[in-house]
Length: 247
Image (cartoon, rainbow, N blue to C red; front, side, top):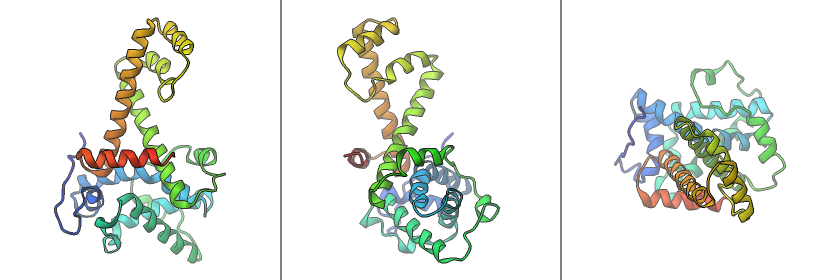
């Protein structure tokens, strides 16, 4: 069972979206582990992309691992002003500073050092995803980071939705519906998909509408986890930021 959302009221953390960082440093062992899992799931790959623009594949992965370890060990709160921006932005700024520090050192820490003592949700196939979505990008670091963050949220949400359909025994239906999830396709394509699913066109449209609603809900839940809040206005604001990343 997931740990409950936390709502710290310390003046140092006046905005709810920053409480994950507080949980990471000040919470119980269970709360800290929960916060680390959420942060690494949401930001491991976006930070990897930032590091990969500077380092080799191995060093980029080590940089991300080492950075999360530093979140646990160092008092980065002194740099943080929750009233002035998003946790996501703070993580980028802090990570770039960390990477600059690594570049100044003669030897970057390798696997087998400090990073092996923490458990993160790393991204399998990160390098191939980097090559596909970011290697050729000429965007500035912040724009690229935000776009990869948004893509990560969408991909995670879709994976969770796929797993939910599988639990219902509806994986074949999901595979037929998902091809039309994010685009308006010609009527003849919808008719063909409906026939393949053994459904009328109207029933297929209703099922597709339900899938889209469930997908949006999964996205909102993922954002709620990284914001550490169920406050609708904050989730809506973050959702707008997610869509803006692709504009």
